[in-house]
Amino acid sequence: MSETDGADASITPQALMGYHELLGMHVVEWEEGRAVVELTIEPKHLNRSGNVHGGVLASMLDSALSLAGLHCDVPGNIRRGMTLSLTTTFVGPARQGVLRATGTLRGGGQKTFMTSGEIVDERGNLVAMGEGSFRRRSGSESSQGVPDPQLREPSE
Image (cartoon, rainbow, N blue to C red; front, side, top):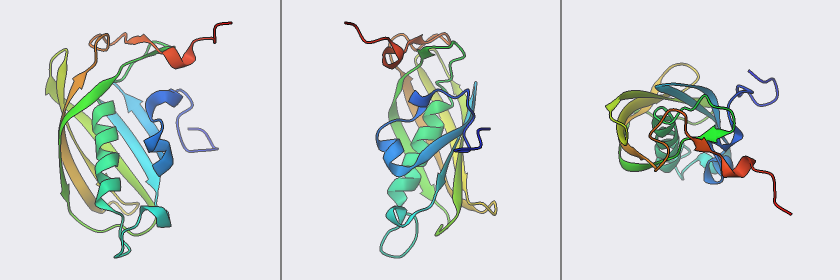
């Protein structure tokens, strides 16, 4: 683990981009069939009741669950997918600290895969759980993935 951000230095920076960075999510573990995403709760994550907004929790689950089926060991390559369905059950409130979403691959084939997971707070209390179905994009069916265009040298 890196001391600067708590994320494993071997995890590609493209694992979570854009919207995920805006929320402040970080991939802290990622291996074939399993992914873990963390988020430190900030005021921007809270709803009017002072609890983490359900949309933040659903986004964490969507990220962890999808990444569980998209791991790639080939340096410079990436696997991409899209969410087909996501079911989220909110179990308990979270107001402060670090949330940890874990996604686990449960089944599927080359193109479509199913995962399940949960979010716990730093005391291990269950906050939310979910299940999802995802589709790997063209070229991402293989565990070798495809070259990541974001890592290409700019052409002159």
